[in-house]
Amino acid sequence: MSVAGLKKQFYKASQMVSEKVGGAEGTKLDEDFKDLERKADVTSKAIVDVLARTSEYLQPNPASRAKLSMLNTMSKIRGQVKSTGYPQAEGVLGECMVRYGREMGEDTNFGGALVEMGESMKRLAEVKDSLDIDVKQNFIDPFQTIVDKDLRDIQQQLKKLEGRRLDYDYKKKRQGKIPDEELRTSLEKFHESKEAAEISMHNLLETDVEQVSQLSALVESQLQYHRQAVQVLEELSEGMKQRLNNAQSQPQRKRMPKPVPSFDYDPEPSNGSYSPTNAPPSYSSSAPAPSLPNRPSLRQKRHSNDQPCCKALYDFEPENEGELGFNEGDVITLTNQIDENWYEGSLRGQQGFFPCNYVEVVVPLPR
Image 1: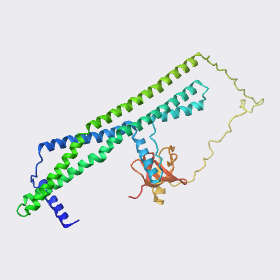
Image 2: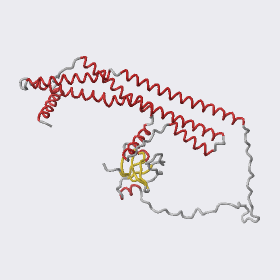
Image 3: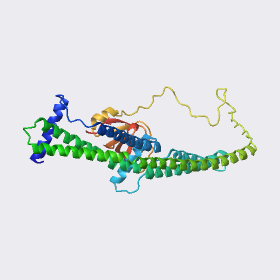
């Protein structure tokens, strides 16, 4: 940084301390500018908050959002172009219904109904995926452009304006010690930044027509989604009614009792009683129980091996590529913590990711 730049930073820091600590008053901005700044601030907060809530509306499960974000990040690190899609609740339910329906048999009433409803739920998941794509293209992406460009430009202009105001106020207090030309140049730069900030905020407020258009696109995407969902559900309802009528018209199957197995009696019992041919072997309760080898406790293992590790509290079945499965009680070697929700570790020669709330840390990772 040049000498002039260092001096300017010193001027601004000195003026800020004077205002915060000493109670010195700086140059006041006019009421029109303050009103414009207030409106732009409310609009900026509305855009950012609505954008975040829209993402939560499309992907309501925070755990799935965290997992999806982690998997997509790891895909980018590994150079994989394809990203994992959000697991729609309708699709997960549909897969469950289809799996159990086929295990029961599609020729049964319940099994066939489960398969039919499961396939319809998977169609609803595809419709929801289409809603996600439409809303992202027609609503989220345009709003994100405003955040990345317009709102960032306003923040930069206001920050520059505040810096030049501090510089001008410092020099104004030392008028006579500071050359008049330098003071005049500082005042001109202050007004220049003020004008640029006003233009940025005015341009944001004048784009309300585009913002209303994007809200309209969001409504159209939702309307199209609900129309398609209603069509799928109406077809499913007709199918369920037909299946119900067919099931009610079928005669009930009667249960045929099986013969009770007979017991063979010993013709000359030694104690006057009988014993079945397949009696379980007897054992003596006085016989000593086999002793188990002494196993080192988990705490003893911890002292004997300081390698970062954790103990599984529940069974974890991997659902996506890159996840590490384990059973309750397994001791997993920790290699990394991806974020507050996911660890990376290895078990039995396999390496992958798993959720933090499924395990208890025994030896923590080094900080």
